[in-house]
Length: 234
Image (cartoon, rainbow, N blue to C red; front, side):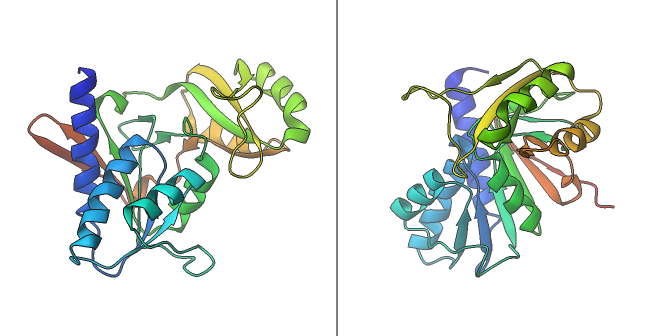
């Protein structure tokens, strides 16, 4: 798929997800380019008074974009339970397990995913894979970064601290932490790896999302429309 085709697929998937939002909903707003398309469409529906909603942003960037688009915002303090969350993914497998975190918002995205009654993941076909593999982001407190990297190396994760593109030094998350990108090549047991990573002292969260498959809906933008895949509820 060409770059332009992928961009169109992202837009179509984002618009489709935004059209799933109903009047009065409290909506989790994900971080990244695909989730942004959903926000653009959601903004249009709010502006046209088709629906009235409030959003919980998963990053400072998303909050800024939502304000620019005129989407009313709220917090988890006021609405600890969300009707629906819309987000993207770096990879999604046939069981709807995800790798997320290239946008450095994985912890807040996981909190919002947990709080939502339904998680809508929007993606282009290039994000759909047969098996999860490659880089898994891990958010860590700076104090523990070095021993955590040693542990990840022993696990075969080839860890490296993510560095900023427009600044010297490490990327700092919205929570004030570092990100360590770990390349695990193939991931035969995503659930087991997620549990192992999050149990390491000093790890805040990792980018594997395996616990929400039952409430996940995947919207894949494709030529000629969107393909929608529903998770299997337990």
